[in-house]
Image (cartoon, rainbow, N blue to C red; front, side, top):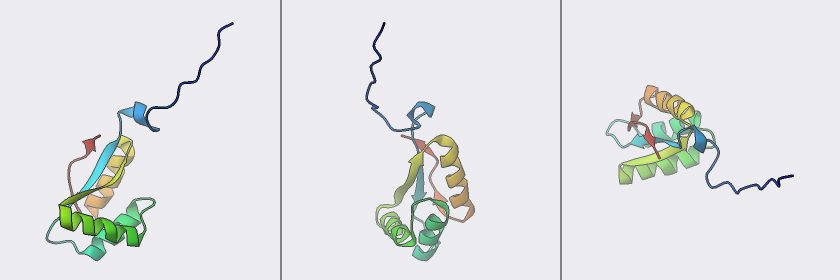
Length: 95
């Protein structure tokens, strides 16, 4: 009788579904820090308003920030919601 050997996971959940997709918000001249922070908190699970302000600051100073990564279908949803709220989005990237 053969022995079952469990191999350790070398990548996160969803990695078999095409890898992680990155949702990236870009800096622009028309969105305020308040709008960016509140929009991120509204649509991205786990982002609170204070964390949203940290992202807004990073976006402002570096030109962009990855605000979420995961499976493609969810990334597409978040991308559409953020773009629909007026944020400037980079195309989805596979990581």
